[in-house]
Amino acid sequence: MKKVLWLCNLAFSDQAIKGGSWLQPLAEKLQQSNKILILNISVGNVSKITYTEYKGIKQWILPQSKQKQYGQTATYKRCKEVQNIIESEKPDLVHIWGTEIFWASIYAKGFIKTKTLIDIQGLLYAYTDFYLGGLTINEILNTIHIKEILMPWRNLFTKQQIFFKRGQVELRYIKKFEHISIQSQWVRNLLQQVNPIAHYYPTRILLRDNFYTAQPWSYKNTTSPIIFSSCAAAVSYKGIHVLLKSIALLKKEYPEIQLHLAGKIMVGDKLQDGYSIFLKKLIKKLNLQSNIVLLGSIDESNIIKELQSCSVCVIPSFIETYCLAFAEAMIIGVPTVTSYTGAMPELATHEKETLFYNSLDYRNAASHISRLIKDQALAEQISQNARKRRLQENAPQLVLNTQLNIYKSILYEI
Image 1: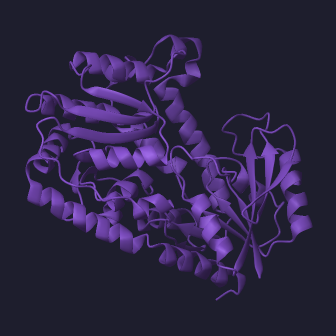
Image 2: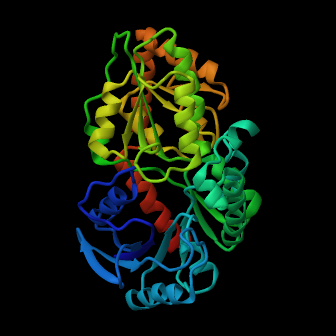
Image 3: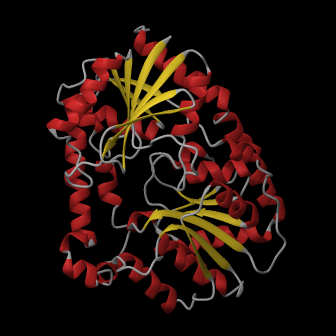
């Protein structure tokens, strides 16, 4: 049996995962296949390297480094910690998940001699051009408040530059890899311009078990529709400001309409970021105070409940390499209105499994939402088609076989 050591940001546990993750269910399925032995190294809130086991998976949790929070270059000490575990366990393959933090640098700096695969999740350098989310200069200036004045590196212009700089580091590391797995053709198109000689492996995403077995969405004939959307953090490229403008238009026709927003955005009593304050002021300006419900971070079961109870789900992001929230809505069968950007067109077809709109075009987005609220036949057709596609493309056995075949191809140089 071959050993595959993961380097990822998630430590496996029985605790509910907020925000969504396909890594833990995939690790469990691989372990249960009896074809691969999974090991895992992650980073967590521990004071020293902590060894644990989860469902037969050996894992090491490394303490948070004193380096910058989003540091992409591992310290020498961190590199040696990982190298020592690799030398002790002697895995046949190392699988790095993502370029957002320092895992890729450990390989790029030569501390990993084992065959290594990197899976691309977000692409920082590709996000830079979309970071501001179409905000006007005046709107950007209105996101500057006390927090941004006290900490100038938190304003949107500087954050965009930080993304650019991190993206340049990311590019240097990506060029070092021979084996790269990708979640969409869109990502492959970008990376082949950067590293044309790498071997690319299309992968598939495993959703959490409950999304496959949950009661499918059903049409709601109502004059008080609920629109659901989620945003992991208060970031401008997620397009929540565009969605709010759509809701303001829809309120003229549906005075009782509600937008349920999940995620760490506009919640909490601590000093809030300027973008969240901008959104709050925009809500007041658009007279939406009674129409917005802030859910905060919610777990898997509550995400499913929200999807089942809404009329339409909206994915307003300006850029996505793959979108787990979109896939989850589709598999529940929720009709969606989605921005046409990045890899989104690879997950669904316009007028068949979703309704697409240009990221900035809040008027057209509002029109699409209204169509799905009113037209039961259209909503149910899109619902059924979306669910059918996700059940096929995200089928657990297909996802498992795809991942096993990727490992086999690298291990045996097929």
